[in-house]
Image 1 (spheres, one colour):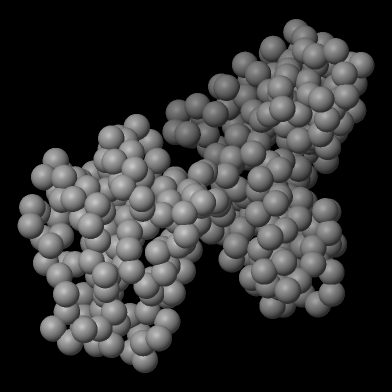
Image 2 (image 1 turned 180 degrees about the horizontal axis):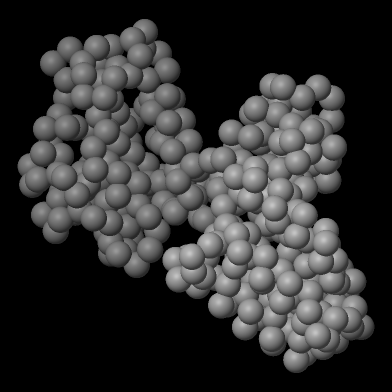
Length: 336
């Protein structure tokens, strides 16, 4: 998350929170509203009066003229904060009202506007930005290194330390959803003493970290059939989604194709940006490539594509489809 160089709006003004990452958007909005109402004795309550009057509305539901009512001065002079969500969905007349308001905001009101960051409503976003509104950007976190940085920052914010193995194990166990990762960090910080490492994560999740879809995929592409099937059955038994396991198998095989197609002499650090994989992952895949041929990778890709369709509804049993996929991947690795 980053922000423009403009100073924050404090207790009044207009602030744009732009981006797709819902957790970061929600945190930004909550922080801005809390700052605006920090001196008030009553807690904010949506749609109610009191010492701090906070209104929270979707832009799509605003009718022409309603914005003026929301931001009009209070009879009792209390601090007012107005949150308008999803302004890319605002009607033409409402968008024009937002532009006019941002050019001359009320002195006693904080208006927070959220925008998904896509092409829809871009003209409005440009106009609001040009009016001098503070901009906080919350782009989607999609790269592995960004998720790693996010988890580390969560632990730091909680006053706790997690080593590299613990961070990776937590992401493997929980997945890529930031809200779930944040909740997991908070729970581990509260329940686990000392440095949070791989062993601590494994104990806390009772095997879920080791039995994640990525662990199944790693063992399959390494040709370890028995271990892969054991991990698959444990993962399914502990509630890991078959769709996630299928996705992990596909990612594991695709990584073989990506890394196998580049020169061996090029460093993993130099390849990270080109392949969209962190250096440690490239190093691991290079070790896993032993025993693989281009034809084997192609056949494995076909197998995981078929499995994905089976898992998503075309097959009678997702578990059976995944077992067949694991067997097929191992056979492709060994040349069978």
